[in-house]
View 1 (cartoon, rainbow, N blue to C red):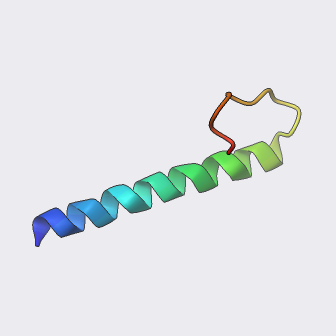
View 2: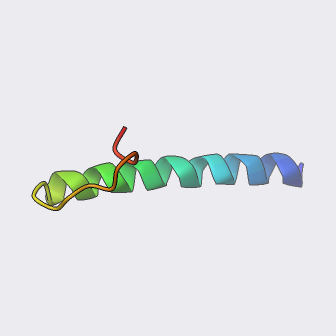
Length: 39
């Protein structure tokens, strides 16, 4: 059961990271992006 919980936690962390990067890009559109992270 613990392994499944860890898998879900890692998946949620990755999703939260993508959302945070996208929101940060929306808030600061003039800042240069890191290649390969926005899509």
